Image 1 (cartoon, rainbow, N blue to C red):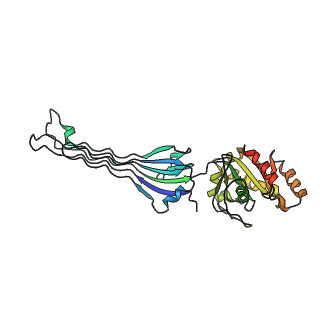
Image 2: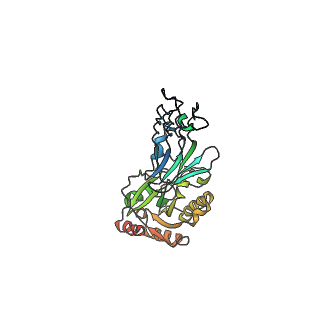
Image 3: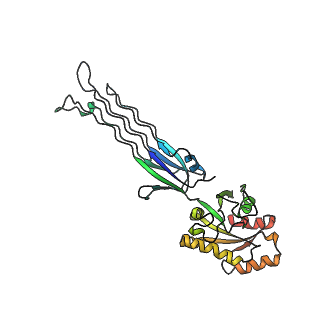
Length: 313
């Protein structure tokens, strides 16, 4: 199961308290300062399932810094925590929903919550005017963030279309993916990824009319198309109305975000082995009114698969 939205509370470590202490013989102040609290950083990695780590742990705590000790000993600083998140993850502040950061590259890091600074011990306050200070600072509180994590897949190509348009079968044939397939709606309940010639292909679960208002699998999957470079619009040759199918998906994209219509689109007529070739040609003729690139393909036709692979060069 792919989790693409979750809520997590992050809390950096508090700084250790400074210490009030005096040397026994000379009576001078010798209280050490506290150590710094641990920071929390997030790092982008290429694993779309990493938000699943928060199904149980929804509070991430960094350790506090140690308190200062006598003989001017500084408390140890706490270790930083680095949380790996999928590239394409946006982190929002739950209180006002402003964007805190967005991870778009592998190994990209962002300091999410800064640990508190350790407080100064009384040895730091010694001066000519105050040679025997009897005070020390408490450690600063670490930053806290109640966050919403939202994942949008980052892929070079996105397979879109109505349910049962052959997207998952096509992804399996083009790549080493093993997406579930079946002759019924919503076989794909979460996005699948495959790689061909270094290009990432995302199989977006089937959309239906009204998806942009929450019908079917809803807008939860429309958002994954936003980060896709090229749309591979799959339409089954078995359809009774290929133009109508095409328009349904385009309308849902427009309703969700009109800018999605500006993306490069390649129309793929799928399942060409299941109908007469005259029907396939008729489908291509009708769809060429809406796009210059219309490619027929059957997952059982080696030549057609090879022809389709040329677009990934």
